[in-house]
Image (cartoon, rainbow, N blue to C red; front, side):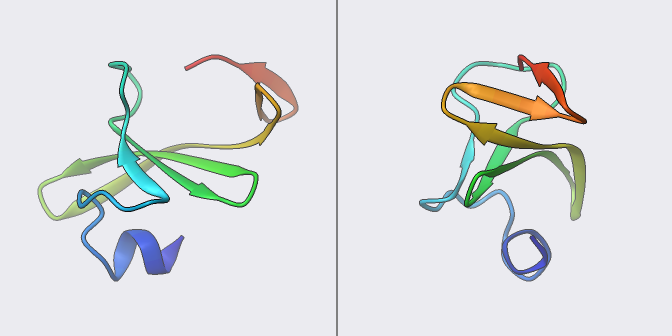
Length: 69
């Protein structure tokens, strides 16, 4: 996460880091690291991580609970 969000431009899209296609109230961007999903916002020069979850198949789980963004 540190490499993708802190040391690089977090708002610049890459294969694993991109802007969400559907608008979400919680986050603007998603970072994929293996089966982990990190949802975050970029506010000026600051990156705010909003949610971290694990995705298996079509199910995203945050704290063991099914989550829909």
